[in-house]
Image 1 (cartoon, rainbow, N blue to C red):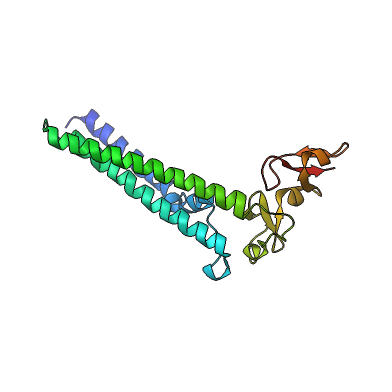
Image 2 (image 1 turned 180 degrees about the vertical axis):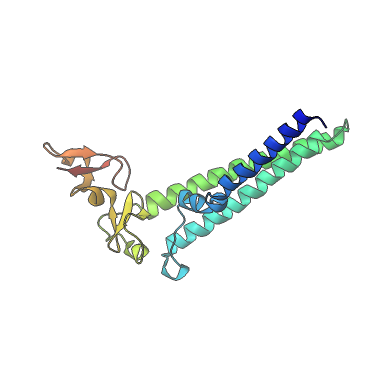
Length: 197
């Protein structure tokens, strides 16, 4: 082995070892980030409301089914690519891939429908904690998400409008100047706006 190849090999090994150390300093496997993005409730089961518990179970179940379909797509791709000129093996890989893609589309649609139902219909009543979500904020830090555009403060679930200002939520037509309308801070969709000074 020539000197140049040895130097390049040593450089690659040192670079690989140093970058592995930087990666290990990150959040292990990204599980906290994934759980936050999935908006899974952090409460113990005994403190969860029935809709939150059902939503968590359905979300986890759909996630596992999605992983299974993704694995089937990978398996079908490997089967198809390693057919080596055997048409029956290639056809089997194609069939598995087609059915796995259809299954994945169905799971994604079910997830979207479930997310819509549980964020807009079940948790969207909102207000200043009187919407049945007060229990979900017990023992939670302030600014923890507890519903559609709602966060925890002092153990109560309040709208983001109430958290960030002294405003209140209501129809856009009821917010008259000099008050300011701001969307995205109230539950119940785009027709429900934050009206504040």
